[in-house]
Amino acid sequence: MPTKIEKDVLSGEDTTGHEWDGVKELNTPLPTWWVYTFWATIVFAAVYCVLYPSWPWLSGHTSGLLGYNSRVELTRELDAQAKARGAFVDRIRATPLAGIAKDPELFSFAVAGGRSAFQTNCVQCHGAGGAGTRGFPTLVDDDWLWGGSLPQIYATIEHGVRNTDDKSHQSLMPRFGADGLLSGAQIGAVTDYVLSLSGRAKATDDGAKLFQEQCAACHGPEGKGNQELGAPSLTDGIWLYGGDRETIYQSIFFARNGSMPAWAGRLDEATIKMLALYVHSLGGGK
Image (cartoon, rainbow, N blue to C red; front, side, top):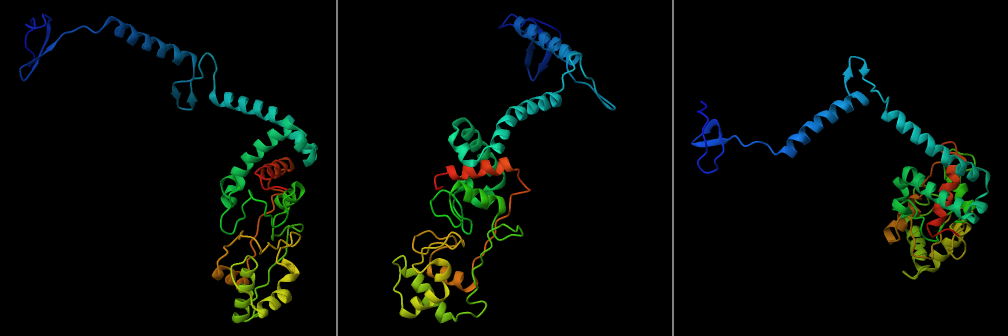
């Protein structure tokens, strides 16, 4: 129950007449600046509701006197950006790769566009920044299965590897163990020979002979690889699936024939060019 309004002894302020457990509420006026601010916010809200879309109806909302629409504004901004990019994209489409690389302004735009396209389409396999992962090659070193020049990178992106595109890279490694082409002992001897190419094992005469008979046609007599066939070098420390003895044995036994989609038809020519330039700029391109 409220009590009668009286003066507070300590502060000299009037009370509101409310009391809780002996504690009386003072009737202290709000600061003038706060009151003005409060009314200003009410006026601002009223004006805003009149000028901008605000109140919902059964089918839509009030449009406001200014006719502002955030979706229309966004569409306008996107159209303006697309128009600005269009001039560069048209130039990229009409300019050979080598010509783009020689034009600093165009090259800068192409690399930025390629980076964006890479983040959307390529990082799932090749990792952020082209770092690669097991079974998916890194794009930042100088070890290229199908060649690291701009035209070679462009062709690989455009047509892919071991897919239904008629122009994709199509070489296959035989399944020497799974198809009974070599026995387990023979595969072990070849594995030791492969390891010996990088100084990690001692080769046997049988392993060397089998390698020349079965593997040299693709990987070369010295195991240095062949980019025309996508056959990797076996003499360095770069291994797509792992370079320990067991993994190499499994690679020979079952073969490793990974694939890459053809991006022609999925991406336009200008985007593929930008991707090629970006990948080449990562540092490993030749």
